Length: 116
Length: 111
Image (cartoon, rainbow over the protein chains, first blue to last red):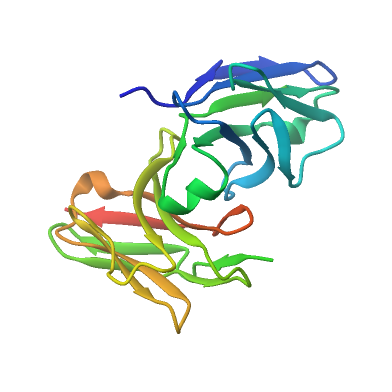
């Protein structure tokens, strides 16, 4: 079965550069969540989208922005990168915000960003 | 606001024995879901088991079972017959208005 696809899997950038992470949800899933997991930390919620509209916002820095496109894939754009942005970035998808309450929430394998 | 507490930063278990990973939660949402994820050293987040707040029976998935005690707001994960491959970080998470993870428990299975 198709899973959540994230690209790139690994990314190395220098301070003050920009980076874009992509997430392709499971087919039919219309809700996307982004999480950031620093070394040795639990995942922190950044932002979510439902039907191409932002549905919730967490601890996402102002330097970051995200959107969901008409094909439901989502992109997380990060500018003016800082050393502290080095982390594993997860995308998860579900079929509708409420349907997450049926357990239909699956994560991609993550994109590991390293800022030098 | 929602919160997950996992009081065991690290746990050890002998291979083939059962182990219980603790999870307590706090939420004001009348309807919510509880999830357990496994994160091996490779980093991916692997879904293990789900329990809905209105589910009458405890969820089970193979060797994984969720001991759901709603009145105590606990959702402990029980892994039966531990295997070496079970060594990983385990995260409890809750979904109500949004999805919140706990701090995780590192499980080490000893041969």
